[in-house]
Length: 119
Image 1 (cartoon, rainbow, N blue to C red):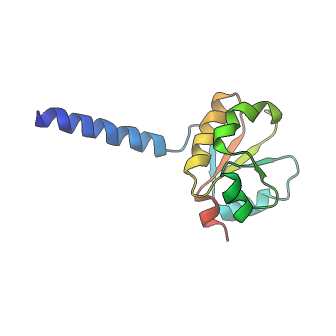
Image 2: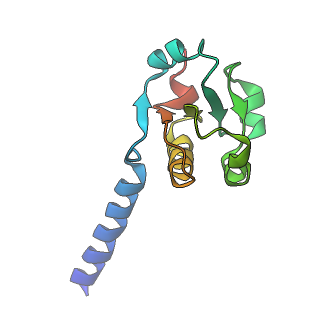
């Protein structure tokens, strides 16, 4: 019985680690690197936090599309342009990056550390 519990626990840990790893094909940038992107009008900036979080503090260039709505709103985004995704810590934006890659977006960039790392 102990061996089964260890195997189940190990499997759960592995799943957790895999969910936290950066998405393959998604560029990871720091908030310092983000600053050089903000002047580029050809980039789409998406903040996937809740409207309340966004209202409390956001970066002007970012449009708020909460993560739970992103799947329904991908048709409003250009697959030809780069898309930079941010959230509070980088976890939801990593999920959003995976969703965007699956939807056929080629140039997806995730902001590591999210708004918590923004100065």
